[in-house]
Image (tube, rainbow, N blue to C red):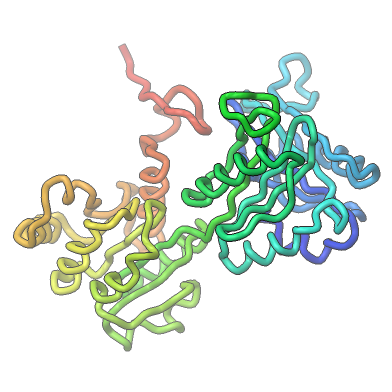
Length: 371
């Protein structure tokens, strides 16, 4: 819903339909949580499959708007008729299409406001018997009910845990919340604040990295000790521009760093790099990359070893940062860094898809080798 929220907030009050991917199998084009909305007067925004099944979802959404009754549809590959509704990629998706109005989703404004302000919130919706019952979970408050106190308690416990890692998935329970039972399926969609990207070094490459970071959905902070370079005019896409010594700023921002965080060190100056990386490599950041030549990298490693970093700690440092794309310009370099961040986050091979076999979406690709 995050992707379509700006469009659908003005629709609230009149009934509209929200279609959400709730489960995927094999090479599905979109992940759980991908959404498409259809207004009462037929305007559509968003996507659940990248174009494969949108026409049918649109028709289903119009029925849901008319009847006010939610439904779950499954779409898979069509083997018999290339014009039939299906996913040409061979995957399978399940889509929840539900009516949204003041009667069916009284908590909508609460959820929308939380998403827009960056407050963590989860929406749990029954997608089997009792379809459409909903529970909204915040770290300190629960609104709504799924119809049974035991089920509510079990779902709240799982939803709070999912808010901790930003995951979205279907959970299964017994009728009263029993574990290892499958009578009730609940789609839990966790909305957490955007992951953070910290870019250190207010250079032209940093401006390009900040732009691509925003494009990927990060909350981007640029930091440099030199006030003449760290300016809003030079980094208009960044959420924050901070004038401070990088290591001192990072020391005060440790509570904002988790496994989703990307730290991009672009200063390639040891007086900035070494104290910054000494601290960065002791955090839980999922990606820590540093720009510089191989000679700069070797010198940096020697200084970090002298500062007490272990080989295991140093192994977390990606330097020189980025994939080998032959990048020259700041924009090309930013793309190479972004590609490496995505590959690291997804534990992907970063090899050309043409040289791999297996699933493209959500699977592990294997390298194709000749006999």
